[in-house]
Structures are given as structure tokens and as C-alpha cells.
Image 1 (cartoon, rainbow, N blue to C red):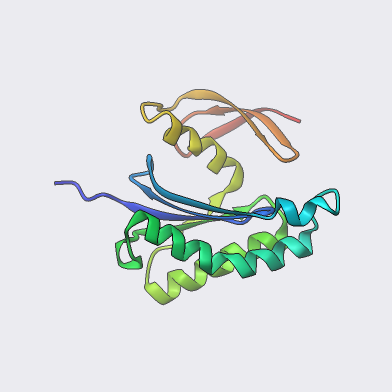
Image 2: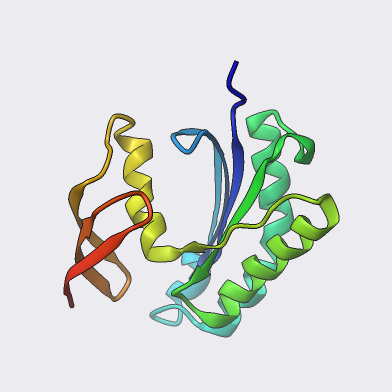
Length: 161
């Protein structure tokens, strides 16, 4: 019998702190999001320093809630997968540093995830039967791209705006 693989994704590239527990790369067991939208609204946009500080305040709480909702513990997690870029440097550092500390303390492998490739991989959750190759239109923040997804790990940017 094949063992299920559980990953803990940590996302902190801008103004939301998110932790998800995903089974076999396709089934979301939990996805907890702490948004900062109300905090930044009064400034007319995201303030990087404020975003970073709010990630620090939220990340442990969000992680605990994600584990609880998925009904798992760190002992069940096979890999920790934080976003490493692109994004706001300070915000990314919070998530990545937290993930590195968890990885070290719990002896769980760490696998950094490119933010843009993470958006592409989200399609595998929405469409479990989807397999490369395919074309993908990716829009996130200031990034708009048409990407040829050649395999799970090979991408070619056809057009970037």
C-alpha cells in the first residue's frame, strides 16, 4: 500500500499569511488564511513593513489552526514547503524563516516553492485529472504571464507582461 504524502505549505509573499496541509499534492486537508486587507486599506495599498510585522504575529496561530483542521500533527508532515519568492522580501523572510526553523526543529525536509509555480500547481488541486503539458495564464499581483507547462517541473514563459 502506497503511503500518503502530507505537505505543509506556508505562504507569506505579500499581505496574507496562509498555511495549508495537502495530501498527495492534490487534496487540501486544511487551508487557513489570515488576511491583512483591512489593515492596509487605510494606506491605499500594502505597506511592506506592516505586512512583515503582521506575518510574525499570525504565522504560529495560522500553523496551529491548519494542523488542527487537518487533524494531523507535525509527526504526520512529510515536507514543509514555503514560498521563497517572488514577493515582498520582508514578508517572504518571515514565512521562510519560520519554515526553516520548523524543518530543523522537527527534522522535516524543507522544499522551497516559487510563488509563480505555486499558482500553476494550484490547478492540480482544482482539476485533479490535469497533467502536463498544458498552457497556463498566470496572473498574480503585478505578474501576468502565459506559460507553457511542459512537465511538473519544466516551464517556458511564452509571454510576460
